[in-house]
Length: 153
Image 1: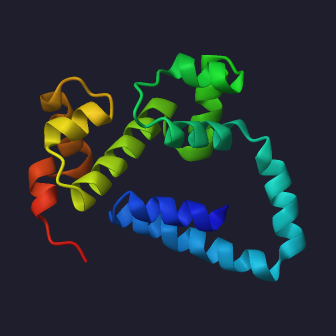
Image 2: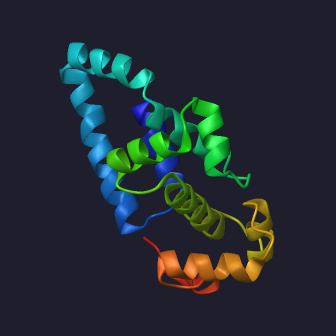
């Protein structure tokens, strides 16, 4: 599971925040080989974690325009309880977290495909490509076109 998470995050781009997360996840992955009993117990606890389950749901539905209500319906919690729990765990609201996942995936598409910005916008359920570009620029501090031109290594 951790290896898949590392791999999926690598596919989402190479922002500093993403690479830091991957690095820490890699250390967790390596520690799981040394502390097998602790790791198994931790995974049993996390299996029923609504925040973890909602993040998986988000990652599997990047092509949809998920609302807070849709997420809550999926995991069976009220919007207020879920939002509080999610923010306490991740430091961000569920909707902000979902938007950042979409933008990370947009970075991946910009890096690995020749899709036009409008196509990426539509693919990620943003009907207005100009809104998508403004949102991308706000989060990434560079436009999608400029991001595509950046040398990455």
